[in-house]
Image (cartoon, rainbow, N blue to C red):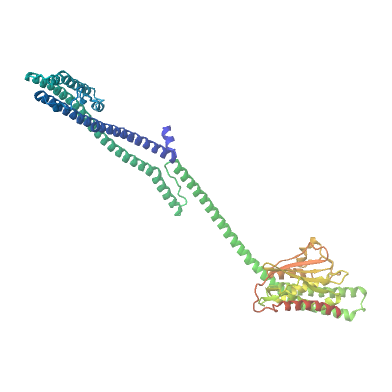
Amino acid sequence: MRLRLQRSHWGLRHRLALALLGAGLVIVIVVGASGVVLYEVRRAQQRVIEDYYAAGRLSNQYLVSLVDADADVQSYVLTGRESMIADLPDTDPPWDSVQPIRDRLSDSPAALQALDRTQQSALTWYRDWAQPAMARVRQGERIQPADVDEGRARFHDVRDAYTAYITVERAARARALARLNDLTNLLFYAVLLSALVAIATAAMLWGLLNRWVSIPVARLGAETRVVSGGRLDHAVSVPGPRDFVELSADVEAMRRRLVLQIEAVEKASREISAARSQLEEQAAALQRSNQELEQFAYVASHDLQEPLRKISSFCQMLQRRYAGQLDEKADQYIGFAVDGAVRMQQLINALLEFSRVGRSPVPNIDVDLQRSARTAVTNLEVAIHESGAQVSWQDLPLGPVLVHGEPTLLVQLFQNLIGNAVKFRSAQPPDIRLGARRQGHEWQLWCSDNGIGIDPRFGERVFMIFQRLHPRDQYEGTGIGLALCRKIVEYHGGRIWVDDTVTSGTTVRWTLPAVTSTARGVTTGTSSEGSAADDHSIRDSGRLARRG
């Protein structure tokens, strides 16, 4: 039972090797036996055809030579003519040697013995009667009829001996021929058996291959098609050699992993759907909140303007009419009220301006930033003149700095940055340098000054709304300028930051996507001369502002 169990777990390679080894051994044995039989048939054919038939032919020639010799001797004895025995030597005749016949009958001792008796009888006839009779004739003696009859009787003994030899030789030849027939029949049966063994071996191998390979492969293919058809809960199991059992186990493991992965994907899909639904709900809530905030900002900025304007107007009227008529404390309180109303109005205007970024119905067009910077310098002409500032381009491009955006917002971006550089100046007159450099598919721009600078620790904080690094009594402002710059840059698909590698003054850098080709609606020309003219305009605007 253990042996059978172990064999049932043999691999396909071992099974095929064992089957081929067994079939090979059977074929080798059958073919070897057939070869041996074929070799024996060939030897028997050679013995019958080349030996016995040759021996019979030589024996007939030997008999003919004996008969011819007897006739010659008889004729000579009766006639005395020497011509009758011209071919007969005085010594033993040439037919005395029967060695060729002996060579053909080497494996038949009885035939050799009979041949020896025939040869001995012929020599006895020749020596005892033929030679003495021929000698007596040569001496002139007349041979009597009785002597002739004696010679004939002696030759008759030779014929009897030859007949006995021929009988033995033919019997040996008949036995060889019978053995050849037996071997030929055996060869036929051996060849037939070889063919049957080959057919049986081929059928056995085909059956084994069908059982070990074709059926498991078809079964595995059917099982796999069931799984690939959508029935992922169908377990894959294929009996057979160990190779196919292991392969089916691998396919089953793959199916299980696939089921787990599909379950994980479905679970993740459900989670994503739930998260998407939640995100859509949150986005809808956020959109409603943003709309409410925008509506609130709009309402607050508009509806608060009128009462705030009244408060500011009446406070200013109190300050002008009753200044010096009340005590010092009252004048101070009225001043506080006027300052608070003015600052509140500035904050509301700034908040309104911040909320409007990105909501303007003005379509985006191709804008030349050099011209936007020139417009910003023109708008800040008074502040530039009072501070003695100088505004110029660095690394002036050979052509226009084109971006796709809203011209008003881009002018406001330059205006806020240049205005900050003028506001937060040091003891030196402000030296403001604008620059632009093409980097792939975007422009990198910068605004550098020689002012008081920004601590690198607050490089991110300055872009937050209403964040101030200095007291109001030292530097005016609402704290919304750089926050508005960030919103404008991000609205146009760029980013903005404070360059912390600069140790002197402040350098603000920002990026904007570049326009690859000039389109309709560009706000300036595209020639390098036009760009240079804009640069000179910026420089001239600074000089005019300083001259007043």
